[in-house]
Image (cartoon, rainbow, N blue to C red; front, side):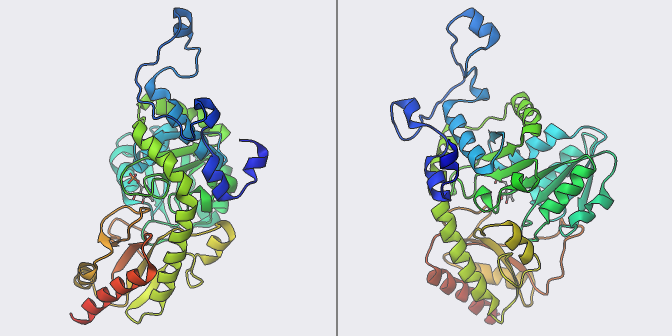
Length: 389
Ligand SMILES: Cc1ncc(COP(=O)(O)O)c(C=O)c1O
């Protein structure tokens, strides 16, 4: 893509990034290439692997189209696509950590990231430590000579703490570590991690890029300095995604901007409505002025997606379940970023630092593309069920 196009608006870019229709007879979309074997024209080319595509695990026109599109969005030197968002967390950690290294992971991290650190990284001899999401530049105090990676996720999973990414990146680099960020919440449309000092940007493309709750995919985008090591590890592991899923994510990108705008608008409307409810103690949405991380969100992010939490004023599991069981439109399910609204009673049991002090249960909402009035009416039914207890 030329410089002129890079200056275009987000939706213009989302409509055109990735493949060049001229490469495939003018067809607007790239082909879905199902491939293991790629043939070489002669033995010399085969021996030197001197052609663009050499084997299915190493990339196809379909994966290349998606990875180029993500590079444009992230401003990265290279992107790998892997079979799930969780794989997009694990592959870079495996790429940059060795036995004897120390990793700092934010305590409000997506639980399966912690699970990977506990089950795999520790077993491989990596020293794992969790830190307060509000640490900012004070992360310097936690850095050790063997700290190789600072892992961030902002806002945090389920409780949406904002991290001061530029301050953390500066301190981490000062101590010789690289910075990874799980940027799934914002997508590169609302926050570009590499512009703020992050070295590797992680995205569960399962969520907003795919947008339809029908596939799993992850991407990791690296700056120039980290690209080779990330790519070498990706090739070593053979964790390539299935071509149909890659194609669907590229397809999803075309409408991601307009879907995100709708998710954002509806989520804000419902978050503000919830703030005025007497049954609600607190709404955990960084775009709200009442959120402790609002200033950071406003400074660094250009928008908010459609997932946030709220805290009931009182009660526990019984109240949370009564509320959830009354919902008809909100489905009870994990994941987010799809067209349909979802709700879940959040567990903070895994946390060691960022447990917060909440007077009642924390309920996470993924606001889908339905009509806001219908979603509010559904939540109203949940509140009625609470009153009936
Ligand atoms: C913040 C975050 N990162 C990563 C993932 C993992 O994505 P996937 O479901 O594709 O493995 C999720 C999934 O919920 C998530 O919420």
